[in-house]
Each structure stands twice: as structure tokens, then as C-alpha cells.
Amino acid sequence: MSRFFTKLSFDGAVIANNIVDKAAGGLSVTNLTESGKLAVVQGNLIRNIFFRKDTDSRGIGIAVQVDSVVSGNVIETSPGYGIMIGCGGDLRDVSITDNLIRDAYIGIGVSTDSFARTAFITRNTISGAKDGAIRAVNGSTPVGSDLAMAGAAAYANLAIYSNAAC
Image (cartoon, rainbow, N blue to C red):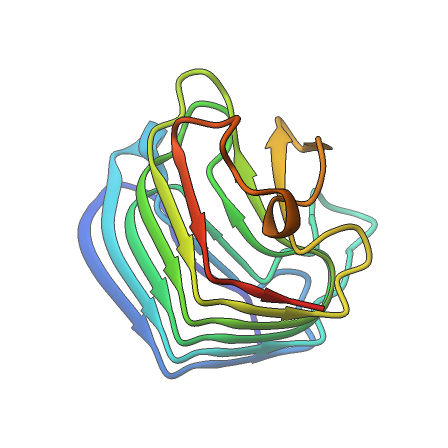
């Protein structure tokens, strides 16, 4: 199955109940630079994501930037991030709740750029993440310790609570 994109100029989208299996990327949703906003990503099954060497594929299950709710998704086997929130300063008002992420390199990555706005990350179950369940990222580089264990007190734009990580 192919990768789903909802990125360019739009105002409201619901992406629900899809299966993405064996793709270079899962769901890529909202883009502040292109005025894409207001999305609900719910109940999708995303698995067997891979890196594609001939493109800029990052092996991400779900990527989201602004004004979005990502809830109730299952992501299994992602060589990059299970969920990536924001890109540099392009992060605004995102809620990531009740997702199951298994066997990702990093479960959830979240931008901590000085221009990034709020992200709420709670009640997610993350297992088998090789380099941390929830990590702050600067650009595409993970920084600091695992926020699922250490908390997000150092980042004023993040609220991270009640996630299960093993």
C-alpha cells in the first residue's frame, strides 16, 4: 500500500481507519509552511515501514505538524520515528494520545525548536523503541534523554504524561 499525504493548503481533514503496510512512510499530515491545518488522524494501522535509499524517506509512521489530533493508531516496525511531531519551528497545538507504537527506532520525536508551540503527549504505549520512547529533536537529531522517563520540565511547549514505555 502507498504512503498517504495530506500536506498542502487545506483546512480540515480526517484520516481514519486505513492500513498502510510495507511503505517507505506512513501518514504525512499538515504543513504549516503550506497552510495545511486542522486534522484528525485516528484508528489507522501502520506497519512495516522502511527506509528508501533513493529518496528522502525517513522511515516515519506518522508525521504531523500543526492543529492536529493523533489518536488510537497502531504503528509497528518503523526504522525512524513511530510518530514525528513538528519540524523545526513548525509545531503548533498537536495532541498525541492513546496510540500503540511497537518496534520503532524512536517511539515519538517532538520538535523543541525555540519557535515550536504546544504538543500534548499522553496515554501512549510504546514498546521496543531502540533509542527512546519519547525524544526531543532539534531538526532531525534527537537530543537529551528519554522524555517518557525523565519528563519534559525542560521544555515549556511540551506536556508529557502517563505514557507507558518498555
